[in-house]
Length: 269
Image (cartoon, rainbow, N blue to C red; front, side):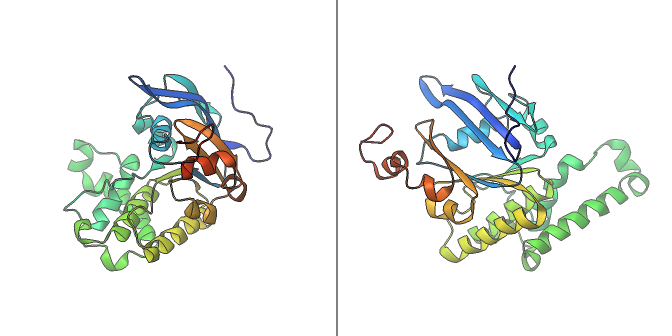
């Protein structure tokens, strides 16, 4: 069995090799090979329906590939269950908000610590001896994240009443509470106005720079990706059509064709 190359100056943290995934007669991914290097912000872009979210679902174990392999830290993780993927340090947010309605901002973020908690009848019965110290430590981490993402003023508010920009920030906070090594953001700026997008872009950069988190950001807006990503890849109809430095990728003829609908090898014409 082959493993990802280790010859590059910066080793890949996550690697997908010749990944195929189909649903009935629809091939959502067709031989996609991508490497995300340790310590970078990597953009995964493409028109709607290009396969971006499907690829993330393969990486995170929701849709195991019919063909191909996925590696994390040079260990194969192809097809392992989502909870085990999270335990490895791969954490994601969702395009459609997955917050728990009726619960406060604080409680939603605390749920991000579930991978570190040890529930059980015995620990509940002897809370003061077995669990109190653990709860205090978890709350300390959550409070630090609330301060980091400037959510202090809404920490006890129900998430239902918050505007979309703040709800997206709460979801980012919950993901950070799981202490990710790789953070996958699925369209983190969808539905936001310009001011909210600027705030979110700043928090993404701060997460990368101050917390040392490797980030994969799924977007269909090229201006967002070119502004903050180190490298990017473009998918169209389940195929990778370009990869590299953002300023070069957005000028690629296949990418222009995919986004404008012009006729071409990968275009929509």
